[in-house]
Image (cartoon, rainbow, N blue to C red; front, side):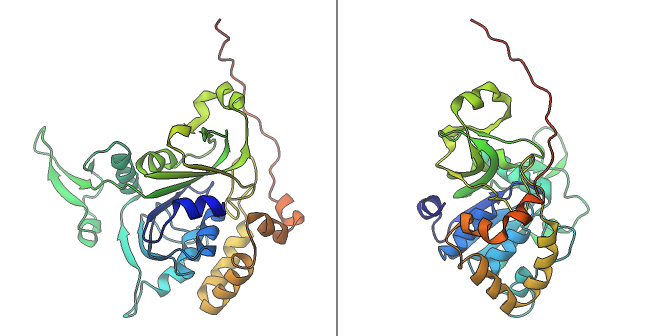
Length: 297
């Protein structure tokens, strides 16, 4: 992880750590903090705890997002401290969820913009002048356009990949694929490295092809405290605990010292959490049906 972040993430970059509710690469975010990256623009549909931690650590100058909060708990207090009041220092650029997906899609397809109907009767175009009304070239319809989003780096967590970076995801899919194709560089973080034969045996599950991947990092429990479908559940206890931690700048700094700067990497983080806590997050077995693709000779 240290090598992947050092080689691909540079000060001033736009970085997208995607994954919708699960498969959020906290391990990569922590390594970015650990390496003291600065002046980053952080893009994500839902800047939840990982971006609160990164903002609290001082790595970001701007957020590009569509929803912001601690899911099921409340606000992101490290973000609030640098966005509210006369001393606000963090720039915000806000869209709807679909607006962010449209931005990634336009970036992935090398389009100049992406049209949406969903901004009528909202104040988002007032708050964000990059959301612009345009006339349809095929009639009198008025729609809104959002610009392409082309991150310097996209970091995607997934269940498995092979050594070439062919990456498979199951469970809830967000916009990992679009973010990856829109980015200049892609880091894939996986729970498990598998052989090419495993990937080829189930090709429809491959979301990100290896040809666009710069680095593959094997990091079990790398998405904790979010979850990885089939590997471990969401650590709801942590999300509740974070609310109190993030409200106090001194407590947040103590947490970073202990859990990010105070460990060499994710393996030490896992050891510090302990087997009992991690084992409690492991799900039971619920296999899906198998598919016979046929052996054509």
